[in-house]
Length: 342
Image 1 (cartoon, rainbow, N blue to C red):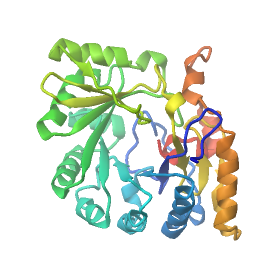
Image 2 (cartoon, rainbow, N blue to C red; image 1 turned 120 degrees about the vertical axis):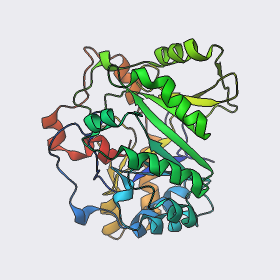
Image 3 (cartoon, one colour; image 1 turned 90 degrees about the vertical axis):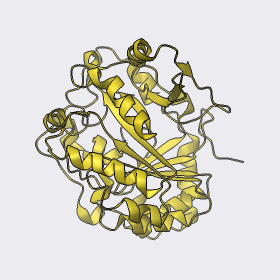
Image 4 (cartoon, rainbow, N blue to C red; image 1 turned 30 degrees about the vertical axis):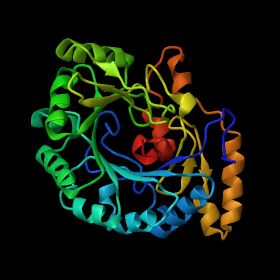
């Protein structure tokens, strides 16, 4: 019998952060000048990550996505991919990256067994990219996307966070960029989580607005019903020519009731929700000599009591603003989006 939480949601997906470091400073994730980093000695080894994933697999896990920070900053990441790809229980092994270092590693990752890759691409304009990320490496992101497409991954997708006044005038252009390359674009509402200290509800471009913008250009857009209902965060749509795209409306229309995912930080903190105040320290259990059965029992105990609906609760929050301010993030870096592996 599958392990389910108090709301009947299975434990089938895990986002695994391999580092809290990043090589750009996006406004929606890392807008500040300085950060408190996790101690290097606390970062899980690849073998520790593989062991924990094995424990989760024994409880019904079927999907793993590697994240960061920027996961490609972790040296020899293909070694971890090779370890995880040998687990027959994993039906899906993917990675999310900003793409800057992807051109040099795409072939190795594919050869090691990585199946799917998602690249963040919020703008097609190099000047906007530089101002938004404090990096001039927009061309490297495009090169990374090209490398991913030629490497032969089963799936390549693009994630675009839409922010009013920044890139909401590029929604059609981003979709056309993906369509011309046979890549599905997923538009993401600007979220008030982690390090988004400059978040404001006025900056959120909602699912409804995104669809309206695309509808003016493409006319008939149809939703793609998925049976059984998918636990994936994106609601998918199709243009008249069959081109598909997705929208992740976590801010205005949360999908908490079907959320089947947990998050493992680079130092082994297991979080049950992107909005969770705290988590379970699995690294301590690993390094203190706990057996796999004891770790599995702890995971089972915690998941069965899970009632987290963080995004839903934020919808009704009075005077809704950024979830955390700078002092709160400094006090606990586990609250940072780049640590949680959004």
